[in-house]
Length: 147
Length: 90
Image (cartoon, rainbow over all chains, first blue to last red):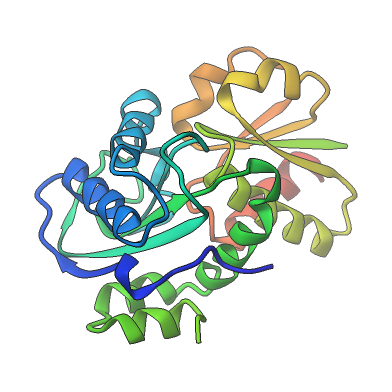
């Protein structure tokens, strides 16, 4: 079981976003910067939320933006965006969001190991606040358990 | 017993819910198959399920079902999952 690749190019700290769309777009740009997804993937992630609502805010302060595997996904990858000011996604319990994860997955059949490791990181209830407070990519990688 | 976790894409959030539900069920010593699915396949996947785990946004889309629909707020809070699964299955 391993986390999807999280290169430093996919980490954005203290991003300025004025809406959830901005925040998800930045996560999509980070996945494009790292080579995990094509630029169109950001719009795919936004469309999932437009279609199904703010369910991607899966814990207080944390959004897990993702879309289905498809032509805009190049390889498995994770992006982490922390926001200078939190934004609301419209979730009844878990707003506002300080940390946005972007997840690109090529094969739904093999992604469970990757999300199991994500669960390992965030089942530690301090992880979201620690990420929101991180000031360097190295700190983010340490919190995520990536050496 | 079959438990289905539902999200919009069938990856990511439903996968996390599946992993954490399996952990909780092991601790509760409850044997179950936990399957992650996307909301468009719910009728097929959940036809023989006892429990559906999801977030509030999908309750309407799940529609009428014989399964217990459990709404989870914090996907990483295994205490919430434990309480709600115990209440439904205990």
